[in-house]
Length: 208
Image 1 (tube, rainbow, N blue to C red):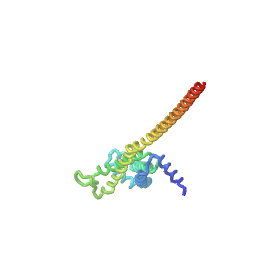
Image 2 (cartoon, one colour):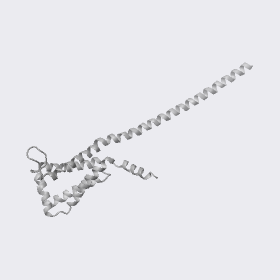
Image 3 (cartoon, one colour):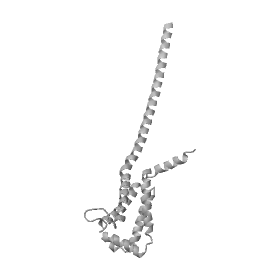
Image 4 (cartoon, one colour):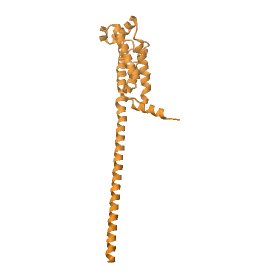
């Protein structure tokens, strides 16, 4: 049975700016956010007004933005973030940064909106804030992907040039040893010829 196809697939994955361990969290979060963004593309005025009122209550600068415009902008942002996570050619650090920024806004919305958390200094959600509080898992995955892309990846990729350099140094060393051996062999051969010539001359003299 031929193993050519799996090897080719493995080579393709090695060339992509992601690793196998990053595929699952990127697909899960990307599909979730992309679906949410697509669902907001053609919302009615009432839904747009509800989204806008909820966000502008926490972020006052959004009050100047028309509800329809805000809904379209939110839809576009979610589609962009979801597509970035689902596209293997987008580096994990970039996709993780986009997810972290997006989810941080959602978590901020949860923490700053009255009635979302229980009274006091608690960050525990109320019944109304339970749905929004679940977005914290997006923030956790985003930070994890960002860390993976910025911190872990250089250590992993840095070993490849080092390995190639070590291989080249070893090859050069082997070539030098072989060259030295050839020179020693030639020198030994020349010494043998010289010794033979001296011996022959000594014999000729003795016969005379």
